[in-house]
Amino acid sequence: MHRHFDGEIAELRQRIVAMGGLAEAMIHKALRSLLERREAYWDDIALMEEEVNELQIEIDDRAIHLTALQQPVGTDVRFLFMASRVASDLERVADQAVNICQNARILLEEPPLKPLIDLPILGGLAERMVHEGLDSLVRRDVALAQRVLEEERRVDALKDQVFRELLTYMMSDTSTISRALALILISRNLERVGDHATNIAEETIYLVEGRDVRHRHEEKLRLGRGGEPTRIGGNAETASSP
Image (cartoon, rainbow, N blue to C red; front, side, top):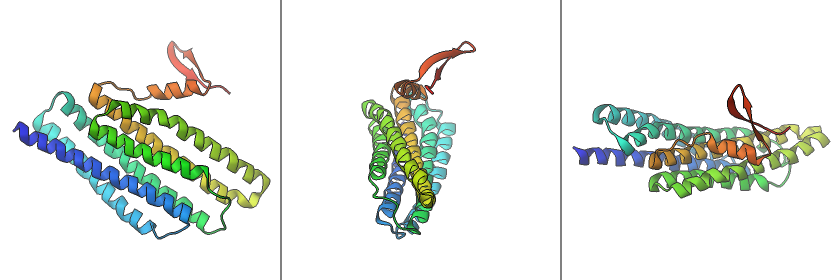
């Protein structure tokens, strides 16, 4: 019976890996569509989104079934609780890929606004975070998961840099507004991809060490940007600098 349960856990893990591979591929194809100014990838992305959605339902069902029937403990019960949350994050990564394509549609209707330099770097970083987040989960590698958490700072900095540059375009020439806004939205889509990869890394730490580190690294990031901890109503909170 225990051997059968281990096999079920391994199968569930493989479903998560398959879902992650699809989500990662969707981001990659969405970025290629943007950089190559081609719609050819959009049909593939739509088909992969359907697979991702089906896998999310399957993973949720398997996790609930195993929890109800096997009554697991320790690491196994943490993995089953975590599986549905990771699947949810991966489904949202896939949604961001679709959003990138929708925003790219606006850009493909007009001449290029500018050479894309920072945005491909941001996209590559977000894509790598998803890959490393999943890798940390499969290998139960807390050090790699911690590295993913630290990379969030770079994603945020690049997104802010993209925004500042595009804002200057919009202020100097109103004809650029629709294209600049589309690029800003894509940078936010990629930031969200990084956020979901961060969530997966946090789940890895929870799985391996039983520590819930959600939101704690976010406080460190705010402090790194110049925020100061303050107390409001007796609770420690963070106040950002103006």
